[in-house]
Length: 533
Image 1 (cartoon, helix red, strand yellow):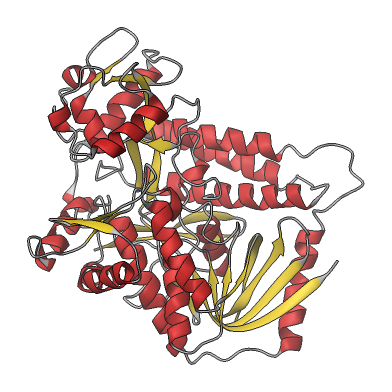
Image 2 (image 1 turned 90 degrees about the horizontal axis):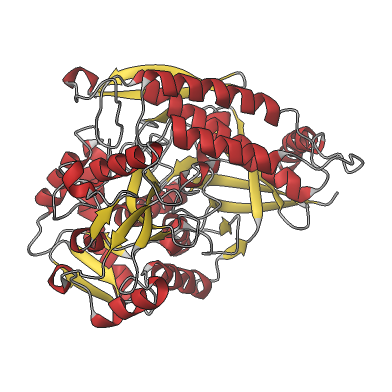
């Protein structure tokens, strides 16, 4: 087995918008920066799959208005210090991105990327990746990070293996930034990149950090399911312009008293809940409802003719009703940080969707890109200023080998039986979707927690015949840890707030203006504390 040890000043795990921005800031500070990515740099990230919309203050949308709208969306569970840092920095960071060559159309509350694709995410990624390449920042692709290496309450680096060659890599670093994204792909229906399996949450938990607000998971109701798999987001205004019906032909807007306007934005959660109910009752068509756009009022579609033509070619919405389904979209909870992206472990920083506290109980539309850009920059600058020292190469090698032996014990090339891990991951996704998804209650959540426990024990019994199966085992372990953290937090919060909907506690309760924290105890996450805001 080949083992590589690489030294760097700043190690960044993840190459979405937060990781790429952090790398650029580290390079500006003159630091030796190493970017590590589970996939080719900039590929298979939620940044690339996103719409390309940034919310920032403008001449018609003041910073204070942006702050208040963000806090209102988060139902006042946001960290005000983080929100203020985000809003204050967003306009300058976004303008710098546009100045680098990203083409955009500005509007009252921010801007949308101009793109030849249906979405603007690829253009955002391209602009940042091009800048990273121009800065000659080192990148290593296809690395699955398995562990953060922590001694004396200080992060000394990270360990991982190449998903194809199986070679191990140890990264000895003065600072580490987690920019691993969220966990949408742990749900059966999602619109996330396939690698969004909660890796950063699991790494943080196993390093000794808490996670906060994990119960708050956002679901988007207008996901095109015509291909049989929920992936492609449809524009929000499609929901306003078209009729939405179930298998019986019932008008869903009328049946659930949903508005005729802004159904996928202002009443996003209620719309997703209505869809989930209809599908659960069997009023679906192949697990979806129908969006009929054939008689749509074009005045309700504020999109260019060119963009509409592209959607016609992709979906044929002008010829036949579209199958739509709700899907997991964004995770609001995560690692607590300060305004510079620092965690409670020295030398360890975090930015992007893996972080908690910014969005509170629900994320305002357009804030995901903007805050990931801002806090990626903050973390990159703070990590570059850090004073942490490294341990000796010999000591690091010893720690690295201890971790490798743990994982190597799971590799059993001589085992004839194929690993069951793909089936186990599928079962986990289904459990989370049905028991800890859009509509929750005490019974379903407890069933979910119990079943996740069974799955976690099954994962521990799995062996890998090759490196691909080991990769799947690590991902499934991460997904199970994250899923348990979500379900535990959701059963503890006995109210409905933001994206968290409890059918047995329908009202928002002021007594629950609290943060729920999760930590590791032995092999599983547990509730560590519940603190008032």
